[in-house]
Image (cartoon, rainbow, N blue to C red; front, side, top):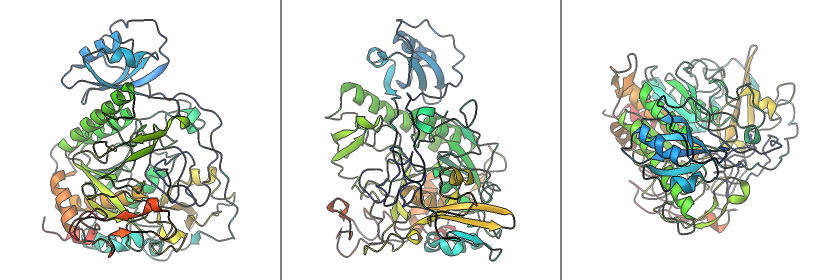
Length: 579
């Protein structure tokens, strides 16, 4: 969450932090950077729209009014309203449905600027979310060339040659868990994110291209020039990098003599792109990704982001206009319906808690919403009734982050009534103030095309920054990047959940060849197998070198507290538990 923190990337929604973190167009949930990101900003802005996917097959009523339909909105119907009745209400408000998700009663609409005012008069419409114009991040510098050989390895030694850089896997006993009970291909893990580079040598074997989907269309004004004529990227592309990093933590190939290993190597990855290249996540792509995940038999879904444009969604926000409250209640209801749908279909939902270093039990202000355009954000008073989406919804397992020294990462959100468990997210600094150091961060897969395009590697392919690692075996080379954040913690927990399903799941008759397990049981085993972590000896913990905003008070017992929930996830204990 990009307020005041360790390291950030510009306007966006993914939950990651990191020194030298590439892609300047993402991660509004990150703290500010110690080193400049390495992606040049786009040069112009344009209004955002939702992908113009096919409209419902029912006949469209004649819209009322003549206002040009030059804007796009996501509309949530009142529960129980038929799609036909909802479409009539949209038309009477002057809009036209261009895409519908009938499973949860959410549609995308083209309409004029007065649509919200008209929609509020329609009893069939619960709320409306406006897709505003996206603000652009400032230009950033490229890294200077690092000394020759920095961040590069060329070796055939060892089953996973980069394993010595993966402190995060060691602390959750992932190598031992894989040896005891490896991940199974019948387990599907959805990476709901900015896409996944399915061609990465450490991901290609696990990546299910046929099941993967892209639910977004690139917006040149925010995402940069389109890479394809239709502005719809293939399902093997990730021009942001965040989703690829998350995917590698979950299921990079293990024991293949190449690169690194993920927590649950052996499971299948399904890339469900809901985030723009810019890192923004809108309502409809999130809804579509979650309902699709439920329909295809996904077992675990990782969500390392929050839904734009509000960090805290307050249906009764005292500092918000009536239209803004109307929008926020629509966001809450739309995402809630989608998570409920996926959960009922057997999807274990795992989400990052956030990087705002906030006590989620007692939030007081939100200074970054709405997050686009850039000038829209203002100081808002919030409270515990306001929700971060999707992490604070029922049935969602909420993950905080610990640093390499085992202390809650300085940026990580926390809260006795919010955090389920904790997992390695890394940090640029340790609790004693030492740093910055990339070895304190978490390493995972990174798209080669992005590494070359953003200047973090030179023309010769060698990294220009210590935050990127190149690994080559023979003529095959791949890139890996250090990042930190609750975005990085969440996939560790999702990987352990996938190992639990691999170990204890049973055949899913609805999806032959796959496994299934009750998400409530998965959550119980994840929590029960976690290693309890007590609050620091001084419950109010001050981070050296950080301002007073980072000082955090840990409430609760060793068995459950606001910093660590039920404890640090443990892959070995999870697969050895009594199912």
